[in-house]
View (cartoon, rainbow, N blue to C red):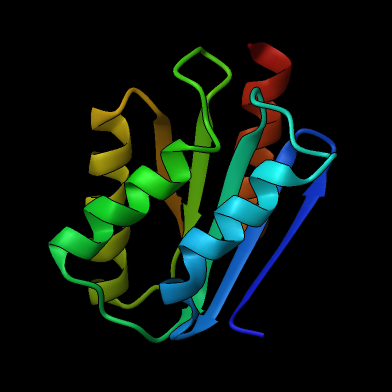
Length: 126
């Protein structure tokens, strides 16, 4: 499956593999109707296995989809996990900028465990 998601505690985990990012909108809509979803949750978007190369407009649209899961309060956080290749880091930084322009605190990581630790640290200090 190109996109898998789960909700554990206060974090929504979304993992994209292959060209799965084109199904992000459908995954977000599924999450929104899940009985486990709460508006104050954080998101960990793991793109480290993605092979798509989205345009700037596509990244802006994906930021809008993710924004649907997040609020603009201090609790709104999105950790973006990307592969360590320069083009993936650049993609992650562009997506982070789009999220930040929407009032979402976002950060880019190359390690999912580091991203999860950042989200959990922010949750306990918020």
